[in-house]
Each structure stands twice: as C-alpha cells, then as structure tokens.
Amino acid sequence: MPNQSALSSSSQYATDKSNDPDKDIPTASIVWEVPDDEYWELPNRESAVMTAKTADDNTGPAGANADPSPGTNFGLAYRESDAVMNQWTVFAVFGVDAFNALSQVEQLDDKGESERTVEFDTRVIADENGNPVESITLSPGDQFALVTNGDDGIDGKETYFRYARTVYSA
Image 1 (cartoon, helix red, strand yellow):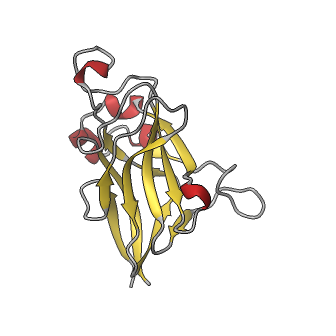
Image 2 (image 1 turned 60 degrees about the horizontal axis):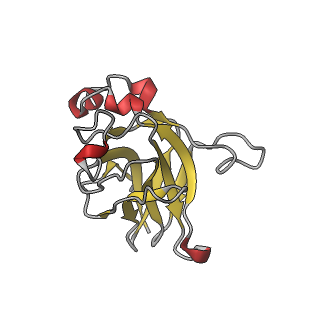
C-alpha cells in the first residue's frame, strides 16, 4: 500500500552535507538514501518548501546574515546505487529567490506556491517522445540530493527542505 509523505531534511534518511562552492558544478547540501525495503516516487511540478542557510554568516547577500546570495542555484539530483564514478544526475534546477522572499511558515501555508514549483528538466528525464514525465521513481540504495551551485557554502544541517513523495514497499 503506497504511503504519501513529505520527503524532509529532518527525516531519518537525510544526511547533512555542505556543498563545495569552489567547484563549478552542483554539489550536495542534503542527501537522502532510499532504504532497502522501499521505493520512492517523486512527482514532477510540485511545490517545494525550503529555508536555506549559508555555512558562514558573512556570505549572505547583505554580508551579515545567513541567507544565500540571490544568484545561488539549487537543484534536485539522483544517484543510482551502481552509478559510474558516483556521479549525480541533476534533473531539476531552481533559484533561491522565491524561497528567500518567504518564511518557512508562509511556504507551508502555500504562499508563493507557483514560484516554488520544481519542474523536471526534459533534457534529463522525459518519456520516449521527449515529453515531461509525471514522476521519477528511486529504487532501494539510490540516493536523492538537494544540490547547490553558487558562491555560498550552504550548511546542510541548518537548511530545511521538503518535497512530496510516495513510498512503496519493496
């Protein structure tokens, strides 16, 4: 029986990371690993909730707080358990602006929902005709990550991220 629940950075399957802003590629801020007895289905075009914090209070846009700079990009990525060279596949990219403008409470109350909608990149995930898919399914042992690319080091421990998912038993 499927179970619909939010995938949250506070879940037992999440591992806090700090991205590497010195690399010019997206690196993980938070990683979730699908347990051996589950499959996770993540829907396309779903509104996310995020409160991101930088690792250093002096790196924010005002230089005195922990909000990521407006140019910081976030994304969703997956890595299969047998991925060649342990590489992440980024399948959605979004900016921080829509999240920075609202508190976590406002986001949970669906304020600015359309601006916080995450859409899968059809160049990465599409059906056989190149059309958008409704969801992606992750298998046991696969990993899912909130990745970051920008000048700020993002503190995975202080960052909150939530996205819809359906859990199936393996």
